[in-house]
Image 1 (spheres, helix red, strand yellow):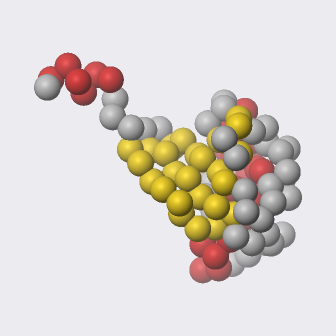
Image 2 (tube, rainbow, N blue to C red):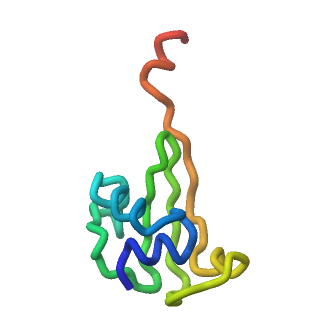
Length: 93
């Protein structure tokens, strides 16, 4: 399954066009490498997605062409979630 479609179906990103833009900006890593929107996602792959200062790492558990909102979280499991501190925050320490 394409990366941009997986991000949309799993509801990690709300719209497929937004998922494409985020991937094009280099904010999605697939198994540790920068991924294009057309990259092939398989069960067991790890995705690292950067949302502003927040970074979410998930493992792909299932692949479905479409899903209901309540079933979307079953497509992945969260490996780690972190918030990166902005460099400007160090100024006030």
